[in-house]
Image: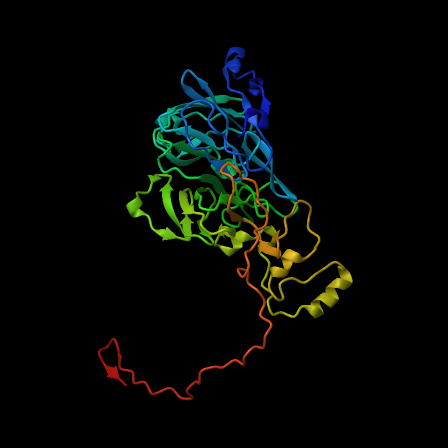
Length: 456
């Protein structure tokens, strides 16, 4: 269980003295922050109503304090450094040390008070995406509230009325701030912890960045040509596996804050979509799937029984979303003999190497010089070699005998006898093809022209 000792704590004095009095500063909840990209253990409720906590993939849930029956949180909008994957870090904006910010978990009917401190160089707000809130708490700068200026702290207070899966993000200079990574997840648990209870409950957000090779800061004016596709601002192999015990009922909540849709595909299992950001889907309206498309600004909750042991792929099925920055805008060279060009170019550039003559899979095994702070196009190793994936990809690891509260990576799957694909070494038969008729039978056409005449 995560505790306050798991996080760095910054005192309430971090709020600008010009914006609040010393008495008010003393009344603020602690600022709890972390800069680690690990998947933290679920935060079991020590106070307030009971619920079944979620696990944020490569993230954590924000602790709270109870004050006069109100659940109080403190979010800090600030510049952060996020490791996208080992070997690359990005200079982003986020909350409480990370992008995305920490997940907020409350219970249906809770009175919630969120203090939001702005440490950005510009104004901001927070919109509670999908939640029914009073108009003055909806977080649209200029329309429903004044913007939160740098150094200021604002308070949002409302009742968490509807259980479900939601998000939070700015509605002030939204193009810049969301392109820089400002977002987070929100869970409102049902009053009854037994309602649709599952054994393991995960959540993450789909987000994307345009960061030039060798750079650290995203290009915020990009509309479509993103080159890093991430889950919770992590790209494979930096994305943690989703771990489940054999027979566990698993829930995965996914929010999409990119600029395009994502067909999410799970290997080895079928699932049903049990919820959206509009609420739970009635059982009579669900159907089995192995891929579900998640549109921009939508959330989807999928559930399945982990009944097949193994290491199963889970990824976006847009193939360009499972590669990293080096794979975009590279011309297709399949079948092109580049030897003559290489002979001439290497006289000037001895380290030059040709790419893509037989496909791009070799990139994952190639030792080639890269700009500083740049991920290879495809990376990650499995027990049989290169996985040839990047971006929006991870594994669902199902194991027999896994303890209920154990979320550690169980390592490589040990395949039972006679269940592993193998090489055939015998003789191959000659290829046979069906006979093709030399002449096609005559076809008579009756053409009716617009003028009403007909012809043969």
